[in-house]
Length: 291
Image (cartoon, rainbow, N blue to C red; front, side):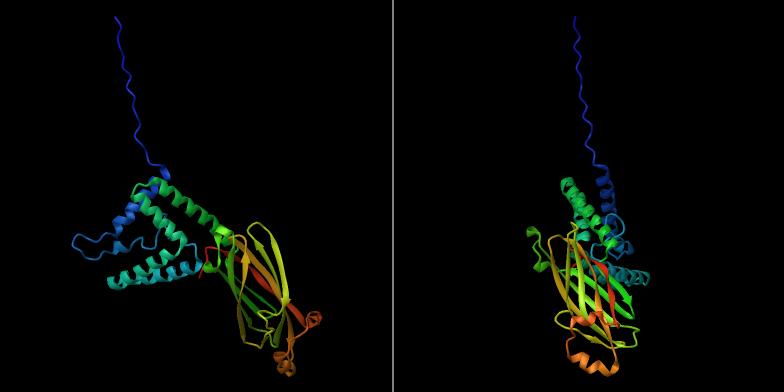
């Protein structure tokens, strides 16, 4: 007599991927912290995590937004300490408004929403976006989108931003504006900017050298204690890059200032004994920096 044996298949319950599960727990904790008390009163915990993404530290891709949020965090802490919940709520709303403008914060919020909805494909895409932005941040820490150098008493500060309405990422075209502030800090004499030399490098390592007389059609004379600032721009075929270079200056005696201020100087003066270079420190160009 044959005995029939039935084999039962057991199917392991579906498990949530470990990294997503960790984020899911964090998202639920943030959601619980934001809930008001049962009696409807404000709760200091409802402000916890307002500038902290699901990874815990409230990272931001845009340095300008990061600086603003850090300042607001201090004000939020003071308001909470004084139990001024109306002020705290206004500051919280301002921080959340900044988060909506920052690509990293938007991605973190999208990840939180996807996890709460148990949409793990969406969550994986959001997490991939965050990881890409983290790689960008590493590059930007190596070459921040601002720099400062002082040579021979002349200080040069430069900062850049991506002009999104003039960029076309689908066509691999990005447009960057940079602002340079030049200050005659400690040089006892006036100085005149003769020429500029730039080295522009894209993300693929391709370099372009740019050299010309003055800046934005001017050869400014900068007296001791004075500042000259200008803005210019450059296109790039990659979403990141760097700029660096130097300005060629010449010292001007007081008796010659009036003539030097009103008349252009020939670039042959670059070889004068009183001519000197002022370094422009390397600074980054990044699609994620828009302010």
